[in-house]
Length: 81
Image 1 (cartoon, one colour):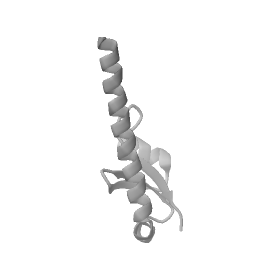
Image 2: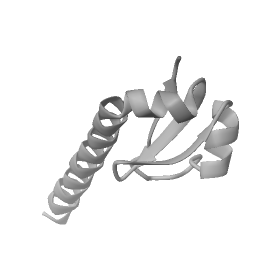
Image 3: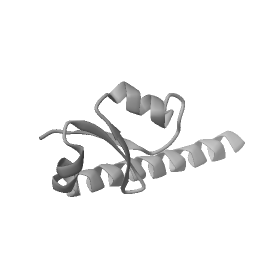
Image 4: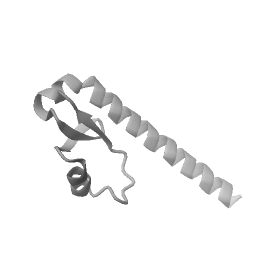
C-alpha cells in the first residue's frame, strides 16, 4: 500500500513538473518576438514563465545553470533570427 501511495505521489509530482515545463515553453513562444530583439542566436532558459539566463553555447548555459542532476522545470530553447 505504501508503494502505491509513493508511486501516486511521484506521478503527481511528474505531472506538476510537466505542466511547469509546458507553461515555460508556452511563455517562450508567446514572447518569441521580444526575445528575438535581445537574445537572437542564443539559447534561452525559462523558469516560472520568465527568462532566467541565455548563452550562445548550450553547453556553457547548462554548466552555468548546473542542470546535470537538476530536477528543475526549466525550458531551454534556441532563438533564431
